[in-house]
Image (tube, rainbow, N blue to C red; front, side, top):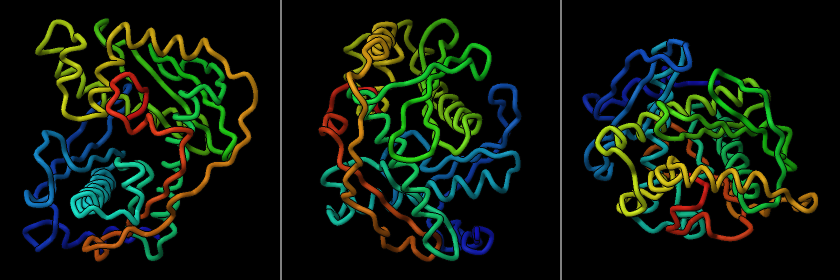
Length: 293
């Protein structure tokens, strides 16, 4: 049961809540009009970054807003735990927000399911990039967009990777997990659309992006997205797809963390985190040429 209308009624800072501002507008994603919301935490709860703390898209403005609030509150929990060096939630192993989920439900189940789904998606992507999983080419889900479905030996979910060559200048990508192929592709397409908007800002300021520029980025995931936006980065992706695994991967992931993330956000939302042990920790390195963000 989604209790967002009740739990989020006092979430804005004017009512004593953690959300400083919320922007809602309409944008077109692959020909579909969607309401998009962007939420910003109060200044003392966020780090100095140009991006919103939470974003959400939906066919109606209220749902988009609620999704943006949930993501912003999840980001609050992530930063608070990182700032205070809280190791009980696995940030010493995986210092990112991977495997986190937030849901304003009556019980914790919704948040845990969200966290588990993201943990599965990210684990599958890492295993594939490390050469342990195969993939199947899909028909183009949308005009000008290519897609593959990654092998998933963990669950029944469909995990997809989409990519697109934008304005004949740069490549952008999206990952998605869902119960059905179409839903997974749409999730990936929305993520790809958001990433394209971020990467486009860089290409509007610079004719081309070289490795020196990529390395200057202070945000790891942006650095990697910039690296793979370049033709030589895309070539690395093609090489990875040409290298098929020798056998089937049957090892079930070891669960390192599966617990509720407790804090002052509890009055608004349940935050959960699931962390799986990865084949190595390169995903958490500072490498720009690791296909994971």
